[in-house]
Length: 430
Image 1 (tube, rainbow, N blue to C red):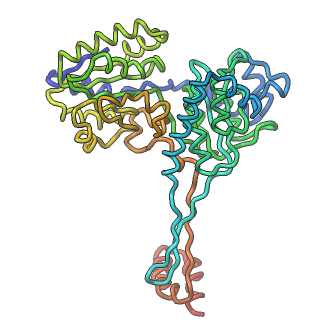
Image 2 (tube, helix red, strand yellow):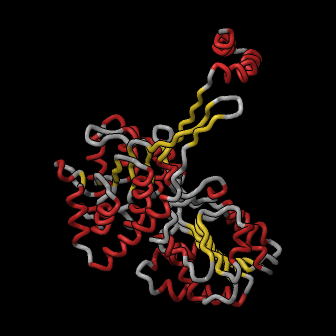
Image 3 (cartoon, rainbow, N blue to C red):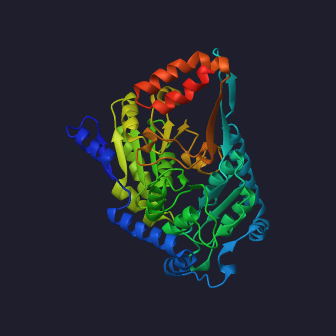
């Protein structure tokens, strides 16, 4: 863990190194993924069977081993304890309500020249969702991906998820019931992304692929963008907490560990204006992490990538945060809105001392699939728009074309495209 002070002579150099640090896949992953994609494209089902047996130790010797369906999802849902079933339903309700408000409106109007203009939004036909099943299984991610797709109006929503050793988390199946998943194919890794993109004899291709995964999954999505749409290329999880000394050190330590326990390459950063508080949080991170069932992962993440930055005043934290452009940003201060007003780059922001990032992971409403690796500078979290596309339209009467057509002819001729000019000119002559 690094402890930095803005008053240190070498602070800028060390902070620049943190900003530019890439905690993502090594270059050799790209070559491996390209090979996997080629095998799936060329060999289809055969490649999937071989890779699933090799990587997941799951045999797909019969068609019943290939997928889970609605009956499996319903059975898992009914088997849940009441409190867990209620929690899933509450999460789904809140996620759906939030995403319904994101639905865009069509436009249709006539301007002052008489040209009718507009745009119509439609969903894609099919979406494929990746659900991790290796290091951890996340039913919350299934809800966060599937519900926006359903709200957008996608008719066919399927999922892929590896089942190492043939085992699956029943809570994932229960979440699939709540989310209205059609089929969950028992495949994972880059080979699952390739199957969704190109299709095989058994699996139909989709139009959009979303959902988190490991370095191979992320790289496969990167390489297949253009064949299909993707949500984003996501890297290791991140949290940035901006906190003053009035906070409970245990609360902030738990917030930092909530991301550290995801993966050894996750990153947790605290910025505070209170040096004594910084040391308290550091101590509580050490104490709490030792008691976690995920301590090996959390301690390695914190040890390798954790950072505490002490600033002279909290206003200095915002420029640092904007450079970090973190996936999650907590503003645990008296007036979070004042800092939020100046915060330009963040995946999602959590305002106030009583708003831990973890509540956003499950059921607050906003999506937890967010840009990482400083991509919040130019991209946004998953939304219904990732499952939709906009088609513009226009209609011109003879009078309307007469009003704007001559300018179109002039521009076409200036660009050296006479057929363009002619297609307008002939109509103007009539």
